[in-house]
Length: 366
Image 1 (cartoon, rainbow, N blue to C red):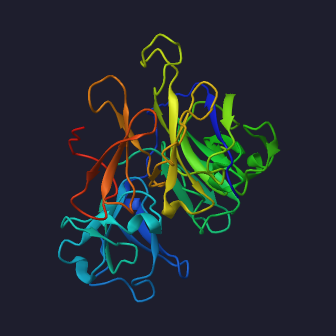
Image 2: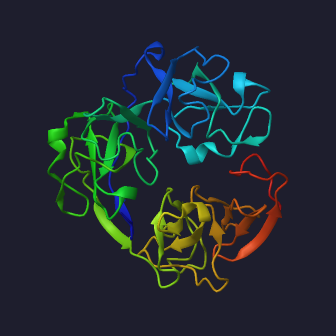
């Protein structure tokens, strides 16, 4: 399934702090083999021993860590030499492959050899629960399943469990596509999700979802009352680059009201990284879309800028001129790219270590 537009909707959402959490000692942290679907779980404080059992040892895995629990992995036996990293949420195999370890190196934890489960901060989560296996898939506010739900629950008949203040946004297609979306709160049974009015106005079956996001929510178990303002359905420039994995970034990029200034009085625009098909690992095109009508703001006279499609760009006024710059990364290049508000490369800063994945705790002088 593919996504051919981004929809901007407006509505009122509220979050309540009244949530119910499972006690930590009831929860387990798990890894799930991508080779055979087997799951290996431990309670808080437990470890795998010298190494993981042979039936999951060095398998490509996903991490399942509910609220209050984190999973420590090592790419060596016996949790050795500080070759460790901790994951406190569901983490797909791709996102385990290049992670900064305790020893400061960037390591591949996607095929772990030893494991421990620790207590971590608790936070509200909303979940879907498979009726076939009883397995749960949970996310906290703002998180999404990625392109699709993990294989162990993809397309299963599910029930929704969401605490007060959170809702589960589901789609019957991959990648939360085509506005085929509805949000469910509280304890929503599978039967209640089989004929629900979606954001696109159709009545759809969400009982066997393929993608998911958790959003703040205050209402009954039905689609949020939102109004579609505009949609982006592709561009003449790189038209096949129409997939989106991460949340767009909001910033003022142009003078909408004609007062000669770009400031908070203008309509906020969207910066988004789009990619072709399922080729997100190859990077994606950085686009700027008008907050007024969704039209493209940039000419791409420079051929366009490629960034890591798995992570949102960062924005900020780096040089103090009152206009934001856009900071992007690309895992194939050894530099940070800084764009101006028109999409032109303003500066590229070499990195000092390969394999970096995020920008943080640095000073940029431009």
